[in-house]
Image 1 (cartoon, rainbow, N blue to C red):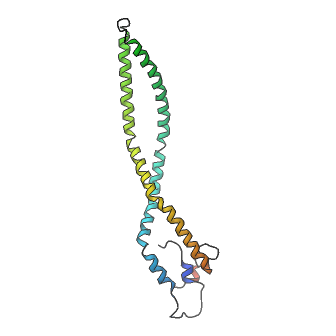
Image 2: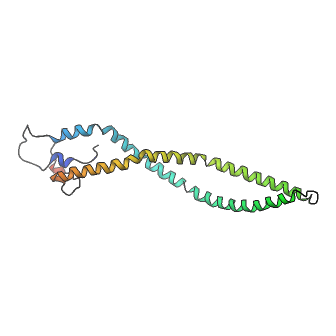
Image 3: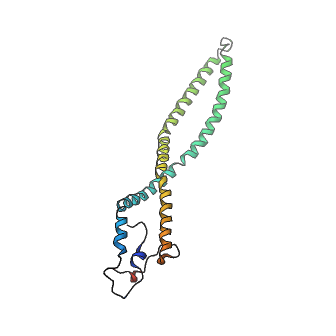
Length: 182
């Protein structure tokens, strides 16, 4: 697999003339240059296979919208419970006068404890997602050179194309199959 199609440079226009045995042979020279990146190209091809799993992860990430709504509801409930805690705190100094409210105080404590436990479990359940986010951020940083290198290679391709009469419009061209020499 070649990074870009250099067939137009290699084959040129068809000719009925016999080739001079001393003529410059572009194909072996270019092949020698690009043979060193052939193993790397196989790795680059493998990167594309991760696109579908990444899309599936993107679909799974929609769960956070629902969790955000839930968090807002629980936040509203927490404000109500805070008011109830303030009420409890005011009742504690006078337990003898409001002894029947001790049961209410105990029920509110159990309710709040249960909410805290469930919210802690939910936060723990988000741990793998947070770890994945950190790993994805690290991967995004690791892949950052791809953008720069792509632009560099495209710029180099344009500079070679501008020097080649076969590519005067700046685009890589493939010769027609009938014009290829083998």
